[in-house]
Image (cartoon, rainbow, N blue to C red; front, side, top):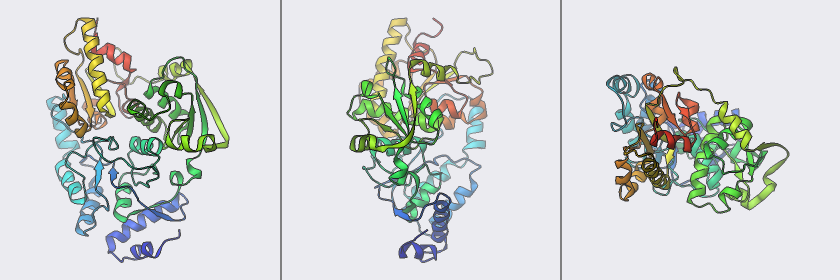
Length: 424
């Protein structure tokens, strides 16, 4: 790898042994993927994926302490993924014992380390850091050092920033040093499409379901999606961005997609059009029957497949302000039609703390609370990692949560029916 004089000096210990080791780690990481140079991180803020004080992450805490001792905080202020615990989310005594003493026993200490290293604020815990309310929204062309898969794919695709699917701690290292190795999605060639996906559905496809189908088909490749303009139009407004947030999270978790292009909508597709498509690109056609096939093939891993749900999680990735408002309207209407006063399944809507604060200042907040729905900043996935939570029949319309946990996926309409009609 060709290094600048500044980078060579860092590697040789000009700023101490700790930073030399960080630099060496990034150089080795880049060489594994064929990078021939390092490029500066240019975004205003960074985002870290590791938000949880899991007892097993001892080496992470040791590394954090070494960086703090060396006086080597992050070169940028940063946001971080959601917290794993919230007392407002339903959990029993046994679950709480496991959460606090066997899983996230280092949470307070770890959050202290994050603050010392450059945490943007005590509210900066969310997987949707790019939302306007949060403020960590990269510009087109910015080079990032992120690793949260749903945030990486959104930043690359919807915002036109450049970031590889890094691993946890690599994200912090890139920010500390101020450089990342140039390969993959940081290169022009790496951002070209390996697949043409033709959407030919008769109705607007469920974002999470369409993303799942594409992710499982193309895996880590880059898809160029045609036909969504019929449903999303050609303007990246709030509705389109919210759809692509959930769509992208499913492509990233059900496959390993780090970038997609939407014909006539996402910034690079608008700028370059079909020049982004490789000459040998494969074609995948998605119609209603294909989406139905994908949905029906999802495994149900509940011990009792006919069990009544005990909990519903919505917001993985975190919900937008508009989603909270729209779901308030839908639940009120569904309850009115079924003659119910409150949701029939304990339900948690998760969103960024800043989004929840803004939502709390709207009339919708009291209306939603009246339906029995709980709002939280929690990470549903971290909640479900508890072995006792894993045994619960939990439902969701998040394909990311379905993929990584025992939660069972239903479409938004099916979730609404279960929340408002229950056994009726």
